[in-house]
Each structure stands twice: as C-alpha cells, then as structure tokens.
Picture 1 (tube, rainbow, N blue to C red):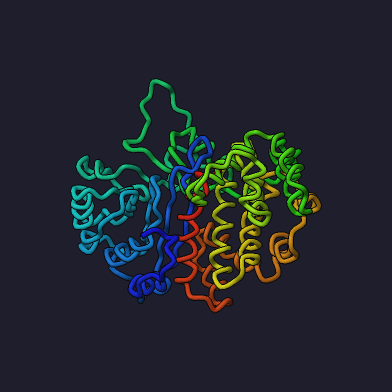
Picture 2 (picture 1 turned 45 degrees about the vertical axis):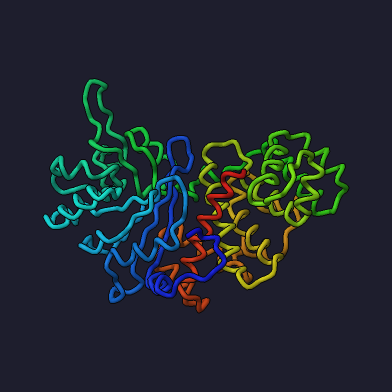
Length: 415
C-alpha cells in the first residue's frame, strides 16, 4: 500500500507500530548520492518484543515503495521460524546479526530464507569465517568502523601493496561514521556505501559565498513574498535555465495531473500559485548546491521537511503545514549554503515560528525538529522522551516517518 493513501492503517498494523521505535538512515555512496535506505527497528519495551515474522509482515502494509534497496534491521528480534511466513517486498533486504550465526539453527534459517528468494545482509563481523554456502546467502555486510580490520589502532587505513589481494568476499557498507574523513577513509578501503552521513561535521560549518543557483532562488523567494508581477518572476527564471526547467518539469509531473502541457514560465507560476511557488522554491533552495559533500544534507532536508509536515500538520491548515515543511527543509540551510542563518533570514522573510525552531530551538515547531534529529541519530531513548513530553503515540511518529520517506522519494524525482 502506498503511504500517501488517505485511509487509516489497519488496527493490527497500528498495534505493531505502537510497540516499535523506527529510525532511518540513508545509504550514501562514494559520489555522495543516496542509493538506498536503512530502517532500524527496536522494541519500545522488552516485554513487547514480537516474533520477527509478525513484525515484518505488519510493516508490509506501510512499506515505502521505491526501486532502491531498503535495509531493515530488527535489532532485538530473533531470526526464528516466523520469518519464513514474511512475504518480503521487492526492495527489502533483511539484516541478520553475525552474532546470531553462532547458532546452527539460525544459520539454517538464513539459508532457507535465501532459498525462498529473500534478500539478506550480514550485520557485523563474524567471530569465525562462515562456510561458503552460508556466506553466499548475503549480498552485503555492514561493518562498524570500530570493527573494521583494515584500520590501525588510531583509525587510519592500512595501506596494502597493489600485488596483495585484500578485498572482502562480499561488498561492505560502513556504519558508525562520525566525520566526513571517516567516510572517505572507508571508501578508500573499498566500502560501497555509508549508513548515514556526519551531518554535523565541522567542514559543513565553513562559510562560503552563495552559489549562483542559490542566489537566483533567493531572489525569486523575495519576489514571490512581495507578490511581484509575473513578468519580473519570469525574467528572473530565465536567468537560470536549469531552475526554469525544474519548474516546468514539476508543474507537468503526475503530481499535478494537469490536462494540458504547460510550456511557459508565467503559466507555470500561475498554475502553482504564489503559496505553492514559495514552498517549492524553498525546497529548491535547499537542493541548489553543487558541492558533492552537501548532497546528503539536501537529501536529509527534504525528508525533514516532509516529516515535520506529516507529524505536526495533520490536523492543521495549509499555512501551518507549509511552515512546518519549510522548518525541516531549511534546518540545515546554513550548512548547505555556507551562509549563517542570520544572513539567510535577512534575505527571505520567514514566520517567527520557523525562525524560533531553527535558530533558537524554541516555539511550537522545535520539538518536531528535535524528533527527526533523534531519528537520524538512531536515538530511540531521546525520541521516547520527546514523544512522552508531547503525549504522542509512537505509532504516530512511525507513520509520519514512513509516509515522509515515501513522499520524499517522489519529490526526489521531481527536483
């Protein structure tokens, strides 16, 4: 079922979502592009731990639909017979903990799942080499940076002579990175991807001049905010053909379902309306950088915006939903553009609630921003405290996260 369906989810599914803390992280490749997603699942209370098959089967009803792989990691579940009843979505890759493979029954279960067509990934480094028949069941391995045998005690990569064969038997994905240098080092050692990205690395905080595309979007935001004439907006758009193309592609996308093809910029602005134009320009500003190291920040910004809109704006009007979206989408704008928030917010007029949440971490939107940050950090304890303070069921948070992932995947293709 697509997550943008308007109906409520099945009560049985909601019961499962009420017992899980779900966190997400993108899989980032060497080009800094997101090539998939990882979901971690953890029981809110030990006594609520469910059979893995029941848990995964319920999640099928709210599974994000995407062509990219989606790793699912039930961190405290036992790989037992119930996993065999799970009908795995095509993009699903089930993680199996290496420590569990000490048990011959778990080894046999992994092999049965593989023969049944389920995709598997190995989480962690086994204590002893796995037999080839078992090793071949896994399409990749997730190795924590602290467990990587190809680094010295101080974390530096081990240099291997070109004549020495030192590659692993399967592709590996690095986890636990704390700095961009960690990611670079892992890629030098042959990693295919990183789970997550160090969003707070100091290099993202370095000030730098706005790029031309960002400057054009800021000017358009000012014009739209001031209800400028269409001719002025049209003239500004023509200064950036790539931006204008994105606007036309957006208006003509399936999301709008218009009966006629829009070919002029002025007509596109008219069809969008100034409020939607403001929203989409905000999104484009958060995705206008050409610096590859900001690509993961842009990816996160879109998902933050969608999450805040779904988690805080479900029962609100369109103005509040738009403000929540902009709060999430702009929350890393200083790192993406290299300009401090004070300078950026002088150029565009935002509501006090948006500025309070982003800059001062206060006001009605601040808790929602803290929630998505806890999810990105895979911090179920911190997330639980926020949910408790808001008296919000964890299922509401999980629904918003999964729905945001689905909607953001659609947005990615329209940008």
